[in-house]
Image (cartoon, rainbow, N blue to C red; front, side, top):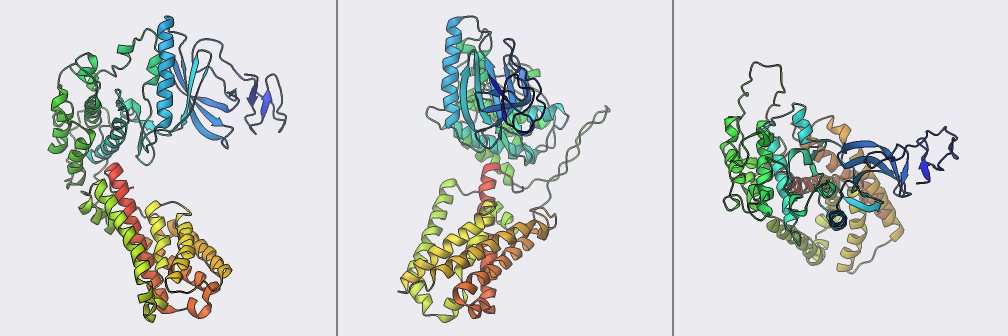
Length: 535
């Protein structure tokens, strides 16, 4: 390591420099690893001529985690996991650990799932092994429990359970299947929006001194299934046991590892009488001692959890509190949603992914067939042809379905240009002025994006499910469709077409309809991922 970065401007300077060559700032002396322990890389030091160390964010045993910036990717903030094999005395064990590290690191780099941090790089320097991965801000569930935030409300635990089932199902259907083996609150990071990520695949256990191949995968006492202690072969049902033990801990605030080992967990309702009997049964079955008596797949478990997530949840009675110093209080149950799309989704959430795909493809096919088959018919009906501009639905739909900036404007522009060409081709006409069409497309797309940018002010702090929120959102995007119609038609077809009041009315209705359909799509995907109907 012969260079390090300036903490002010990021310029790379040689070791020994007292001042930055770019900004002239006085440089602190970088600190370097002087022993076998991890976590000794000093702030502002550069590793692999790419990653600048910001600070240590985690430390323990033979591993450490740093917050770093990637100088080759616009100083993107990343997490750098450092592991050392120096404490493994036996040469054969050390070689085995290094080879296993390389295989698992390569495996992790291929995984892509919303509930897994992205691993972007891995390398080895001497006896140190490094993984570069997405930095996940937030707290682990164990940290939240330690701070006294648990036990957690049932609806929140159910939402986390849905996400865990989804990511475990993704891992279990890899070829070969990936068994996590160490699911527990300490390995689950919760972000600000209550989404979670699994943050530790246990790869660091490869470098614990004295570990043998058959003991690396035992997991954590209280969360590891009985078969992980030599009672049988670990498989997907081992992760289901750990998930059930994790739900037990989140609902009761009790550590399963402190209860009687190698015995069935007690009932959740022994500690939380307010928990629904359905969820209690789900946890009990997930933590059966025999793998054959548990849920046999995460999909089966998730279907059972869906009956809890979608069923009516009565207000929970207050928990009995012992006469001890004040502890955390549970937040009140989530209020009933006022959003019309969410209410419809709660009734239709039983659709499977296959049914959703079939419905989406059917809708797309119907739109294409309608454009091809009805263009000439609509052309002969002046009231519809001159007043109903179907592209008005696209921008609001794309934004509502993705909730991403520029999605609405970009989709609107593409459909305006390609749609005009496709429709006019069907009626044996050509585009009058391509530059005017492109100008109108750009201006109308900009109008849509501007209206989307103003949307938070229109909502005025209202939450997604608050009264009046969806009406304002639908109305505002309907108005955006009207303004987009005007700015599209003015350069392309003149003022008379642009200021057609009847066309404004249809554009408003189509824009609101686009919001409705897009919000249904976005809400359905979110609900399938998390089991929640709120954001």
